[in-house]
Image (tube, rainbow, N blue to C red; front, side, top):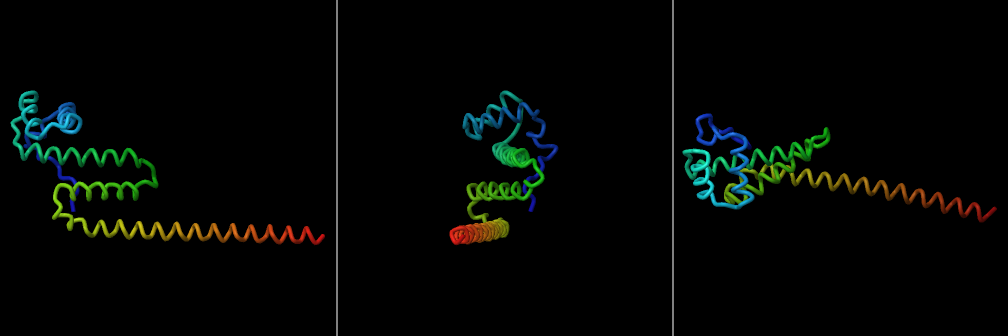
Length: 153
């Protein structure tokens, strides 16, 4: 399953500069303008001849790219790839659930894998905690024996 599709080269939105993309996303995310209003502004300020469905696809594409960029930046260490994948899948699942609730079945397998990984992580933590408790109990037992031996002397 492809998570992010590339914008077509002949797309009206592919010609935008990085600054224009940032401005357009700012309008929609920060100023919370509607797609219709953002489309009108883009037509006026950037000379784009886009459509309503086009700006919606652009928004989805840019949102996914931003999500991936944030994940890469937050998890830019050697051990972070699994966690980055997990966060990406959680974000994509949440986005899909909001935009197309009936399509959530598309990610059913991935969600199941995430849940299984969570279960494995929980079991591993429980094993680690159990081992730490046993080690602590052993230290306490040895200290108690030493105190008893000191009292006998």
